[in-house]
Length: 356
Ligand code: NAD
Image (cartoon, rainbow, N blue to C red; front, side, top):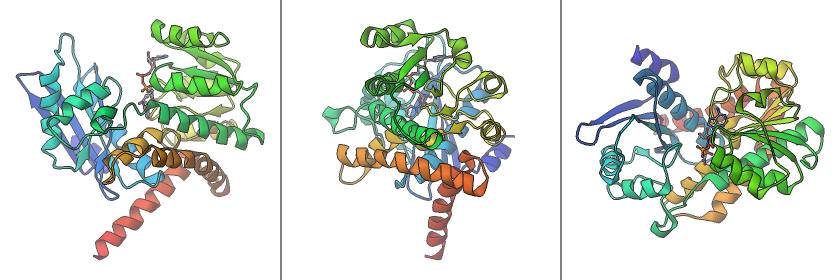
């Protein structure tokens, strides 16, 4: 069963890590290392069961392969999940034990932040391994990747808007932002600054207040009402799989561009339905790559370079337009078009390596 999944998604290696003393249960998935070491964040989450944790890490690590490949950076795809539970003590020893597991892979996998982890946690991990990125500034790290991710999402959204409406101006456009967390808040800053009319939802009241205290023009709806909004643009910045049979049937959005990973519940089917409905979808792994571009410069031999991270992120605008046009020319979904380009890069390097 597990090997069937690995074979269909084409993973290279999956490592199960267990430590009785700290209660650590982690899964590290290395999807593809053709372009470089596998890099992807560590997510800690209360999964319903172990199968859900495995599915999550397999999907997310595969997404990282395509994200790095399409972004032109020299990294492969990997990801790790840690199974959280009620009462689990997640202190320094817990994270350093996890760091030792990362270290045991000898650089085949680099970790970084994801949902539930932070630069402080990366600092603990860094005590046990050098194969960690997203460390705090004072350790020579790149810090929180969210502002750079949000900037890339903003540029990807502008490109999708240009494709749909002929101009990339967001002034007066109505945008529904689902999730006002780390990335969502920075994205909202860009949108409000450009004069977009923003409505948000979140399950966390504190995050909603952080936004509405700063921007009095921002409106709020209940989480479940976001799909019924009369808005032009939908920016999913919370969870994956929010583009599904139910949500698509309800939505009137004309453009989808957000930060969440794996937005399409079914990559082919839901991409196709959006296309048939004339909705311009900016592929998630393409436009949310600012964060990985940021940490990429941190793990490169010359060390963190903000200028390089920003210029890699700025390429998201042109690449989004290029892929939207390619999808049209080839009459395929944008997700397929983006994956096709990413796969072509991986295949060409794999072929080159095989000749050596
Ligand atoms: P976060 O945890 O800081 O923010 C997520 C927000 O979504 C939280 O405020 C949470 O309360 C809210 N939320 C959760 N469930 C919700 C629901 N049902 N309805 C509405 N809101 C809900 O995470 P983040 O770092 O901002 O990342 C957001 C998304 O972008 C995630 O899917 C993440 O994997 C993806 N992503 C993040 C980065 C990054 O640099 N942080 C990079 C690439 C992709």
